[in-house]
Every structure is written in C-alpha cells, then in structure tokens.
Image 1 (tube, rainbow, N blue to C red):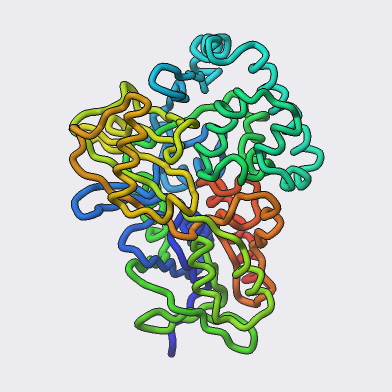
Image 2 (image 1 turned 90 degrees about the vertical axis):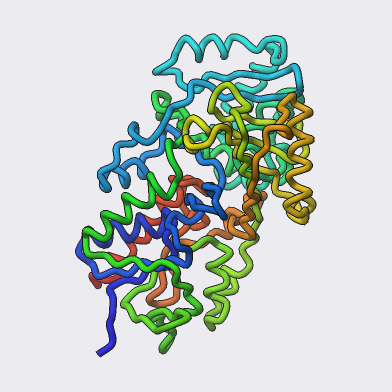
Length: 445
C-alpha cells in the first residue's frame, strides 16, 4: 500500500515552513520537501566552502505581526534574536551623509534630533516636500491602491512635483535600497504598500538586525516544532514534477520516488514554481509562466576588521551598483572580525558581470564613499538569486496569483502571491498562513 499524506509542501522557505507548522499543529499528516541541505529559502544561511553566509542581509521591521507570532509558536522570543537599530544612514559621498532616527518610542530624543537635523543636506522645503510625498501617497494607497501601480516611484514623485534632492536622496534610498530595482522601474503601489502598515503602528516603527544566521534563528526552531508535531521534513530532495490524474494534482515525483497526497502546496520562489509547473496541461499555468521575474545579487565580504562603527542599515543612492549594505560582525556574523553584506541594484548589466568583476566594482564604489576594504579583504562570496523574485515594476501587481488555484489539489504559497506585505519575510509568512487556511478548507470539504 503506497504511503499518502494529507498535504505535501514543496519548499522550506518561510512560506512553506509556516504552512507546515500550522498544518502539523492541526495534526495533519504533512511532508515538507526542500531541495537544499539547509532550511529557510531566501531567508536562509549556510556554509559556502568554509565561509558562513546568508541569502542577503535581512532586517526585521518592527510592525511585522505574523512572523513574530510564528516564532512565538516555535518558542522563540523575538527580542532574544534581534538587535534593534536606533538609526539608519544614507551615505551620499565622501563627506555627506544623512542620519535618520527610526525608533520614535524607545529612542525619542534621537528620533527628534535627526528629524530636526540634517539641515545642511535637507532644507525645510525638502522636508515639507517629503512629507507631501508620503501623505498624498498613503491617501492614494488607502482610497485607490491599484491606481498607484500605473506609476513608477519616480514618475509618481515627479507628478507631485517633489523636490529633486528628496527624490535623489531619500526616496531613492527607501526604494532601490530595499527592493533592488532602479527607482524608475519600481511600482509606487508596492512602495507605499510596504510602509503603509507603519501608519497604524507608529510605536513599532523600528528596524532590527538578526543575531545569527537566518536558518539558525528562524528556520531551525520552526522546523523543530514541525517535527515535534509529527511532521516530516526531507532535505536534499528535488521535486522534478507534480503527479496529475484526471485534472487533479495527487502527489509529487522526486528524482528517487513518487509520493502521494490529498493536497500539494507549492511554496517555492516564483522561478522554481515555474519550473515545477511548466509541464502541467492547464490554461491557468500560462498565467504563472508569464509572471515577470527579476534576479538579485548579493555580496558577502569577510574582512580583518569592521569597516563601520555600528552594525546598521546603510543606503547608498548615489552609487551605480551598490544600493545598500550593513556591517554585520557584531550581530549576524559574530565569529567574523569584519563582515559587509551588500545588496546590488538589479539590472541586466550588473547581472551579466562575473564574480571577479563584481568584487572589483564593489571595492571601487566603496572607496568613492571613503570605505577602503581592499587591504582588509580576506575572502568573499557572490550569491545570485536568478529569477527568484517577481518583478516589482508598474502594472505587474495584478499578475500575482491567488493562493487558491483552479487546479484541483494545488495551492500556492510564496511572497509573490496576493497578500499585503509583498516580497518580504512577513509577506512570505502571510502567504503560508493563507495556504494553510485554504488547505484546511479543502481537507474539511
């Protein structure tokens, strides 16, 4: 008699881990499949030929709600794994930088001082223009959110006659620095949607650095709870295709075996979702295959000493390639004497560069803002996320699929699916909860 599960979940990123956790707590017979030998997906960490790295550099946003809840269900206290940052900085060149307080409740003096300061770079007119940008944008997001998806952030800012200095420094930093794309290619809807929850959680507007690798402090405790709930997790297992019978997905096929289930939750990134679904014969699949994607490159540089005085988020809107970075030797990579984690702008030109070309350009760009790493560089890794993100460009939001699909037995999860927090860790967790709710509904019918 062949073994059969209630639900098979493909992909052990935060979306897959969340749906597996919720289903296992409900005593469902689940199997969680992961192709790597570590868990976490794009929120993971691993040993890369002797250098411990992670998928990018991840920060925890204070108004996240569902991710802390999932961690709590896995016996993790958020404050035990996060170091909260008081400020972020924007480096414009060798001499000019802007410091912003980001914790108005716990550090009100720093917040007010920075808000009233930076006057040599941001005039009163600039600050009023920035306020206008957010006030009008948030109002539009509340009343007509889909209308914002017609504009790039740059086009929307120009429409409002926002001061050029504000666009080039603050708005560029908060858009490209967080979501990789050039400001002219990034949907205004996604931008305002990311910050909108902060309006109702002013007391939670802060950013935190994780105190260890993502797999260690996020994925492992969640997976431990799944196993304690009698869920099964299989690493190093590649799903080659889904098993279809009479228009219904009845299981999966790996490189070694066929495994059957009542439901399958596909919780991989959009790139791998396309690969797994491409041979399914259903009109719906073409909609998934036509979702535009982008690739993201991150760099991880091991150094002899810290290059920054603090481990905090740093934006670099004036550089051609680097959009944001963080020193992480005091937080995520405490065994390192110095560690820079860097996010690069997502462009075809940058994506086509070799690892050696990328590190040379990084060294040169950092030097242009007075950060000289060449003599302190020990080793580096370039991590390429090829087609793993759906494109945040205008007019693409409507292409994101719902959790429920018209294909019987198939449910989607992942930060690219329709949910409010878009391509974030919180968004991935929300999508996992949505997949869990849909699975319970279908299993109970």
